Image (cartoon, rainbow, N blue to C red; front, side):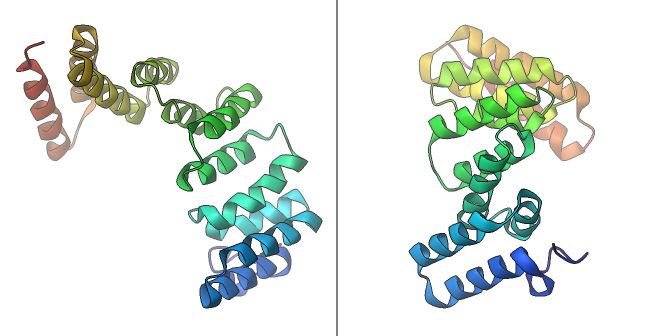
Length: 204
């Protein structure tokens, strides 16, 4: 368990304190192998809730969150949030699209409403055309997801440029235009208008 000041590792207790101590040691020694061994040893005897709480201050440090969430996923193989957290740690650590996509797919199967899982599933696809198709699925599923639409448009534009694909170009323009109708900030509208103008000038 950790105190209400969970974002401050210095006030942590129990499992969280052990993790904070391991991180402090790593920052003194830069011994990555020792850090992983220590985190794995901590995780081996802790319960899932304690590990989740202990990982929270380090959620953007993949080398710390990853080993903790590996154990959480072992304990809770159908916990969509834990699967997403582990997939995100792997993604940040550069573990590769296959393993990230597999974890994201498991999270989607466990909870189809988990938007982060869908985003990781789309991000992890290495083939540009398949990645566009995945972002299309995400945008269609979540009608209010402007980030998914922006990524759909960006990936479609990249595909259009790389492969002279008229359909991808039309999709990119259409999606940017849809985003323009939703945009409220002047700088956002200006960026979208520039993207649309640039794409419409392309000759494919």
